Structure formats: structure tokens, C-alpha cells
Length: 344
Ligand code: UDP
Ligand code: MG
Image (tube, rainbow, N blue to C red; front, side, top):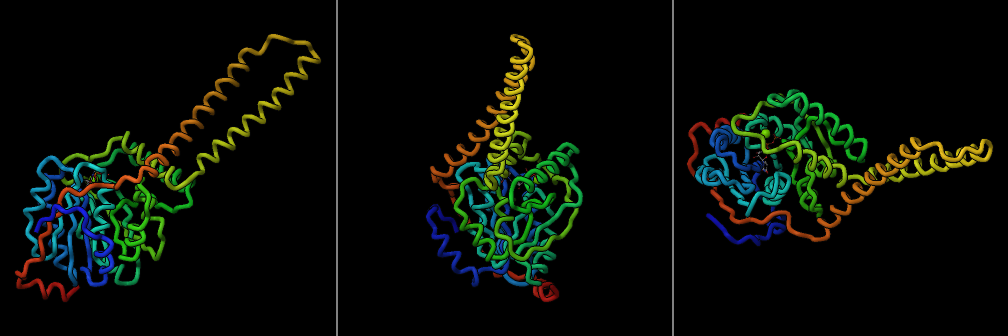
């Protein structure tokens, strides 16, 4: 079934979460034609072992390599498959937001398509959710295929983020996680346009637990992030959850201004006592450069916040949907499927 109508009443759909599937798996992907078939095979095998109904929500974030056609060709044997095609590349954060809006499950798992997050861990996550946890985060104990510089800069960023914001965003915990419908609803209700999802995921709180896992290297293909994009994401993370950088700029300004005042008094006194008039060129330069640097930094910081206010007030949608393709769970049941489900 295929709709081109993008004005589906999502909030009405969300009202019916309690009668929706047990589990939704949200998979944002962008140009992942090399890995999708293997990913889908592994994921659907895993879902066949979970009792209850399941759905996979693939979000095509503007792929141009035929990934969407691959997903549309998948047959829904153990689960319902939806493919939400965005009208262009809106970025992973927005693609995840689109997936969460359309997920109707009582629990929702977010997973990358490149098999860095093993789908085989989903039953463990579901187990924790059935034990009463609302959020099951997945902590990487190893980050195979990532350079030491990426690991080091990620470590520095998380320390900075947690110091600068009142959030507790744990290090080495990515987007791979399970959330109950209650948490997903609160996240969907957040109106902001700057979607730094690791911060947004941490914001609602609720009962949390963590499972540790070894993160594999990418199955095939290339990462979609470069350092410039990561720096942008880091700036989004800090500025959308804290105004502490502005406060630091104010404190720094006050400190520099008061030391300048004290230094001024010192110079005046020195001139009056010793009558020195023209010396002190190096110290003047130092003070000027220091002040200029701090001023530019503070203006840049202000600009970061104003830029974000600009994005927020425009109230543009987070993404546009070009097409939704849905493939309902087939009536065909594997002979041994029922017995496998009973054991889980
Ligand atoms: N992704 C996306 N939109 C983008 C970039 C990435 O939906 O603009 C998807 C990508 O296809 C993958 C997941 O987000 O399923 C993680 O991306 P990637 O593996 O490139 O990131 P990394 O694992 O290197 O952080
Ligand atoms: Mg990856």
C-alpha cells in the first residue's frame, strides 16, 4: 500500500499506541544499499523470536543509491514494514524524529542500518523493558573501526556537554536504545527544531537501565559523518541544552574588565610617582589582543544562540515526507515460528 498524502493524522495514530504492535524498530538510513539486505535479514530473524507483533519503520533520509527500492522489495513475513521516504536528506536526527512519530509500538527501538548496532541484542532490550524499564540504553565497550582521535574527541565532548548542561548524557551511549511508548510520546511532543537527539533522549528521564555491548565496525559502506558535521552536532548539543557558555562569557568579561581597572590604577599611580610616560607598548598590545579575542569569542557565542533562535522562530517542519510505503505482515507463518515465540 502506498500513500502520497503527507498529512496523515499522526497524533490520532499515537492515541492508539495501546492497540498498536508490541515493538517498533526505527531504522534511519541514507545511501545504505550495500548493507540493507543483510541488515533486514538479520533484523527480521531476530524479530521472529520476539513474542507479540512487531513493525519495522525504515526512514529513507533522501537516499540516491536505490536504497529505497531495496527496502520496498522486502517482504513482511514476521513483521509489518513501513518505509517513510523523506523528500530529501534532512540528517539523521530529523530522520529519527520522523521514525519516532510514526512508530506505534508499545516499545520502540532505534537502530542504525549499517550493522554497527547488532540487531541480535534487541530481545535482551525487550526483556529489560518487560521487567519495567522505560529506557534501555546501549553502552559501547569497544568502538571497532574508529580512530583514536574520534574516540578521544568524543570523550572530551561528553565531558564538556555534561559540565555545560544539566543533562546526564552518558559517554559511549549512542542512538541505539529502547524506549517505552510513554517516553516516545514525550519526545514527540518536544517542539524544538534543533534536534540534538542524544540530549532529547536524555531529557525525559524515567526508569533507565544500560546494557553493555561491543560495537562492531561498519558492515560495508562509509560513515556519513565528517569532522565538520560532528563539530556542528557538538555545538547543537551544547547550545540547545544550556546557556552556560553565555554565562561563562559574561564572567570572563567581568574578570577581564576588573583586572583592566586594577591595572589602570596601577599604571596611573606608577606614572604619578615616577613620572614615566611612554613605555608599556608590549603590555598595551597584550591587553588589546586579549580583550579583542574575548570580545570576538563572545560575539560568536551570541551568534550561535541567535542563529538557533532564528531557526526556531521560523517554525519550519523538521522534514517533509514524499511517500509512505507499507507492507503488512503476511499471513504465511513459518512452521516453527510459533514454537520459537513461545520460548521467548
Ligand atoms: N544516516 C541518516 N542520515 C544521514 C546520515 C546518516 O539517516 O544524513 C543514517 C545512516 O544510514 C546509518 C545511521 O544514520 O543508518 C548512522 O550513520 P553512520 O553509520 O554514517 O554514522 P556513524 O556510525 O559513523 O556515527
Ligand atoms: Mg555507523
